[in-house]
Image 1 (tube, rainbow, N blue to C red):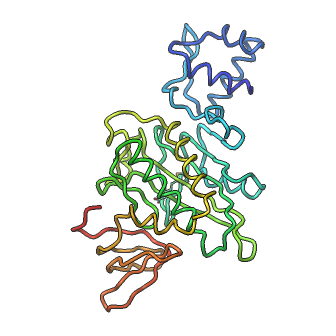
Image 2: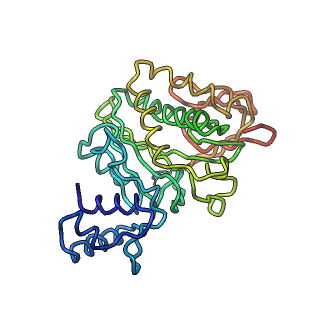
Length: 313
Ligand code: BTN
């Protein structure tokens, strides 16, 4: 095992400070080598403090180490801090990483939201990007993203009892407040996708209200801290099963069961225009069918959706 991963695992599992001597013995190296590894971890952003009784990992119980994802160890790339998991995942995807490679960070310095917004990514939230390689034409690049929002909403409902719904295209809301957002990037060779990267920012134990009015965390909804590790592992299992299943084509129909966007007045903001109208349906490729005031039906493929007052989501 990598010495740094060993140190993190020992510190995380200890309920009191761990002496340099103990680490030195279990690693079979010098105290100076331990000290260098610990400093390296601190430089990577891990909150390790040193006191008279030894080293301590602050808030360590919920550190996301690859070793904590049995069967996925080789595909989990965990960082204490990163600019954006999207950037790292793109590099990996272009270097032919396997499908279901995951880049996860405890904090992001330049987290990205849709429409060039910043996604504030302070400690306690779950920030990750999954690389998928579905054998699909470009037109159906939305399917894996709809699968991700569907499976995340279902998981939050079934495991944590949260009234999660999906706002078009892929936000997760609970009681009208934003719990998670998704961003996707893809590349294709001709007509066929080579990869789709799905970035998910989920408010778990962080407090998102300062950076985004109308946002909520899972901790606030459940009244207790939630294990990011359990959440990520459960999500990846469900998402991978859904993507490997034969009925991915049915994902939009399944997603519609959980959406809070349809049959209501909405406002859609894109980088070019703002549209208002009645959200009639979502078509087979995930585009929103919007009836505008002049009675026409517009097919909207991207944008931010705002529910107009009077609805429940
Ligand atoms: C949105 O609702 O605007 C989308 C937010 C997507 C945020 C996630 S956090 C993990 C991944 N890395 C990023 O920089 N952005 C996505």
